Image (cartoon, rainbow, N blue to C red; front, side, top):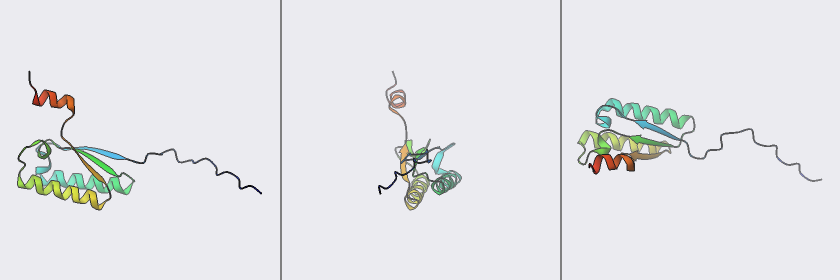
Length: 105
């Protein structure tokens, strides 16, 4: 006899990629408290199925010469994302923001 078809899936969440958007405040990842907050968000997100994080940082990622603390904290966050199986995507500004910041008229 033929095998009956599988019933339709009741899982409505069919997204393969689930990213968190995280924006730092103040001086950004230069501050240890911001690093710890970001790491906590990544850990909680990974626990419920998120597999990437987009980080907008107002300090480190936009600074041409980041401080040693900034670089160390950023590297710790990237290492944590990798250990959690998350993609770490730095966000500094969009093309429209770049026009305003880099090409003043």
